[in-house]
Length: 317
Ligand SMILES: [Zn+2]
Ligand SMILES: [Zn+2]
Image (cartoon, rainbow, N blue to C red; front, side, top):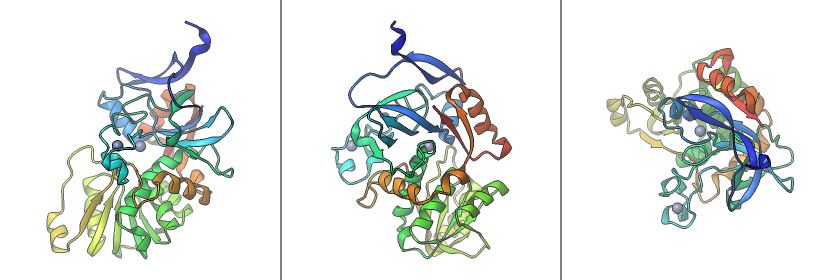
């Protein structure tokens, strides 16, 4: 094979992460040189479950051959079905199997090819090495828009991982006063940098469950006011206990969300890009570790063990 047509990419074999030489991508779309990719908790789950059969990486930013910095919306929905038309891209039948880093090859590679409509052009003040954060920010955008957080005075976020901290940033952007319930001191510190106060246990009308555990759901419900809503951007990989009596007696709505779309008419990814541009303190607060592509095995190890206070572990390509 022509040596020029090979590139480096992360592959998973027998639950182990390795960097391989693979053919460069081919096909329709815009060729993007990848610059930064985040490791997501779901990558670890998929690897552990033996379900990661593609190049991982769905939090991706890069540069086009004409030098335009872009973030990539990795869920390549069809764009024409009724769900896509209604802004519910996650319901699109082809969305999940056609998601980069989940069902098709993702961004932990030197290059990817992406249809133009899934690119978001970046403001010049956004650092390309942090712009992959637009993906988890878009997750937070859909979650908070689904509970009409733009009308909330106070919001409590339970969970100080990447999604919880992105929810803090989005809630601040929407004008809310935000309190964070974080398990670890370094997460609380990151929330503080983003303007979140420490929760004093006073309830709020909107609470975000961003940790994905039974105990976090219980805490979120107990912090939610009567008639309020618990937004759930977290992914439940295992069944959780439902505090049914509390939910029923106080009429608390549970509003889950998955990925992003055009949730209230606008494109969630576009708003997420705007929020990143307007929150320059976000990358420093969330990205705790950076590795180059060759360091991917070690990067996944750090993300998995969460030692050294890891929140978001990033690869720079
Ligand atoms: Zn993710
Ligand atoms: Zn569709």
